[in-house]
Length: 490
Ligand SMILES: Nc1ncnc2c1ncn2[C@@H]1O[C@H](COP(=O)(O)OP(=O)(O)OP(=O)(O)O)[C@@H](O)[C@H]1O
Image (cartoon, rainbow, N blue to C red; front, side):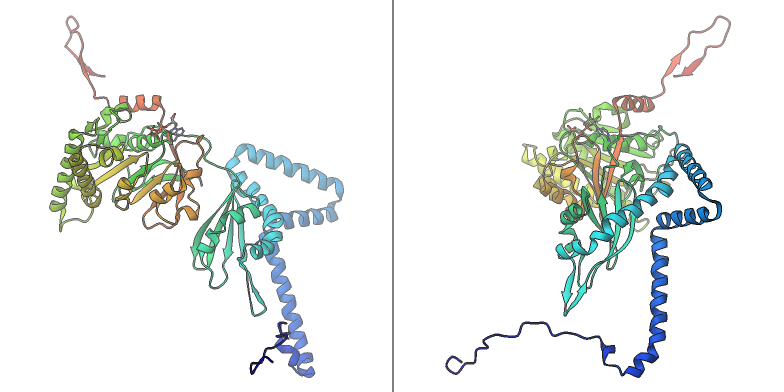
């Protein structure tokens, strides 16, 4: 007691023991319930056993069937059967490696990693990473669900605990990666409360992706132009119709390969007049000058000519938009007008580095008009940028598809792909110098970024592309004595 105030000398800090409710039941009730409880426990055990077999089919069924085989036929037939099985697996791998990996090897790897990495360490890692919580004596721990190993990554499904958000997991990506012995970890939201963690073990995009054969078919889907391969092995489909594309990367990151992969896939449609390419290359034609025949119009500087071309396109956009108003909402092939792709090789040269303030402002206005209004009348801008500075990024939101090739700093990734995308795993600043053409992609409306590699368009491919566009030349053959004069297309 100090004065009139009571001070508790030793406040009680121990947790009150909590007994389960059934402890208070009368004995006769416990005896009556015992058979039901036993039955329930047996049913749970059976369910657990089934789950183990479903989760680990190879490592449970294979030894079990081996044992049954041994009991029926003895040791020597078992050894022979195992040798035959091994030979069959080697043959399978040799004949069809893809299906062997998918259905055989990756299943085994899944079971191995689940049993040796994720299950034994899950509880400890969740507690130490502060992802498990205790409330009134009860522990809430995220549930480890399905594990799938694909060799280069393990996909681990997780059910979050109540009141948890994906951002809490994104903030602990590095902790999780190190804890589960992987190079990095990415977080994807599958549905409310369910996440999928990708634990990355190696890079499946280390090898360049060769361009496909130049096709003659003009049937190109402008919503899904295939310009490379994603890390899951699927085609990288770039949306041009209804989208504006911004490609950013440091020098040597492979911007050229994204650009030429687009041109490569559009080539038949360009030749047939269904798609029109217009280009501006402020670097004096170093990039677009490699295949000028692909372009309907091309300007090789960032001066008045380039600005006039931009304004011409902006005027076309407005004119087409006014004609389409009330008739159609989106350009279609049936309009009979070509879909126009405006390629600007170094966008910053026009809107940021141009010394003449008036030209700079005119260029900015025209590009903003084309990107903001060009979607419906069939105009797409493919803007390539080395340095995502403020001036370019100020209208970044007008580019609905953003491609981040190798960048220098994490802040640049945020500038290009938007806030929060890097936290989901889009580490464009960590792309290796040895893998030009690898990029992180983000489309508006799609939460998860994707990683992909553009086709490697070599100098020889560009020569082939040039020949594809070269106009058919008519040569007069010398007249044969007594024969008709002829001509041939070369
Ligand atoms: N997709 C790719 N696959 C393999 N190699 C590539 C790929 N893209 C580019 N490269 C190689 O990387 C190097 C640089 O590529 P590229 O010139 O396209 O980069 P860039 O970003 O356009 O550079 P800059 O800004 O200087 O023009 C080239 O030697 C090229 O062969």
